[in-house]
Image (tube, rainbow, N blue to C red; front, side, top):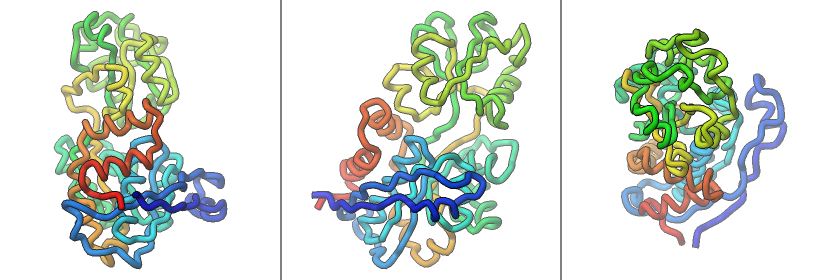
Amino acid sequence: MRHLRTAFGATLTTICLLVAVSGCGLGTAGGRVLSGSLAGPVADVESLDGLDITIGSKNFTESILLGKMAISLLASAGADVTDLTNIPGSASSREAHLQGQIDAMWEYTGTGWIAYLGETKPIPDEQKQYRAVRDRDLEENDLVWLPPAPMNNTYGFAMTQETKKRLGITKLSQIKDVPVEDRTFCVESEFTNRPDGLPGMLKTYGIPQGKPNGVPDENLETFQTGAIYSATDAGKCSFGEVFTTDGRIKALDLFVLEDDKEYFPKYNVSLVVREEVIEEHPQIADLFAPVTKALTDEVLLELNARVDVDGEEAVDVAFDWLVDEGFLTED
């Protein structure tokens, strides 16, 4: 039987201390912490008894899932874990991490390189991108990026199978060959302005934005992130902005076009831990290494779908996967 205890979300005072830039009232997940016994490749990891550690995440499904996974692993190893998952926005969670209100959270290499470290050009090679982020963030911010997962949750554009058949394309470079009236996009408002977003993508692929012979402004329709998938499926646009490990891609049988010029940054996920914490408890790296290696695109597509499509709770999905993969046993 799985161990269960309750971890309350941060109090209003604590949340206000997290990030002044976002003001008070940040919501965090809190709730149940599920733990069992370490098993398989992590069975012999040294106990973390005596460690008090706070885990954070952003407020989208995959980040929360990974945060809950980290919480279950650490609690099963004996740590006393505080749950601060579900913080709204990258800026808020990053500031909380820098200020030491969060000890560890999963982060994406592309986000670290561009959004946090201020670079403008991504590094196409996944390992080189990881090493560049790892070295800079450790030197400048005392944050340790553990080795990344093979999964790459980058941006992409998806279309229905019907649209794929009708237009006869499979790559982003082929969009310029379809009629202008078919160059319609469903996107988030933020994506139209980000340095790694739509304007740069269209420029890279030789499609002028806002021009009659490119993508006229009336060909762009903005939606909330979650609504893009259903809007694309319903035919409101030819191409919908997606996250490539989102479970709704699989559930709706959408086709993701190949980014054949490698415009979008690599977004491999890595557990990022404050240097002070991992220096005192280096076994954290051993605990997460085999779990991180098992996090493929296919795994995250399935787990994300269980939450977003099937309506399961992230804490249950995360714990069940750890058990099914042999990292934990239910006591």
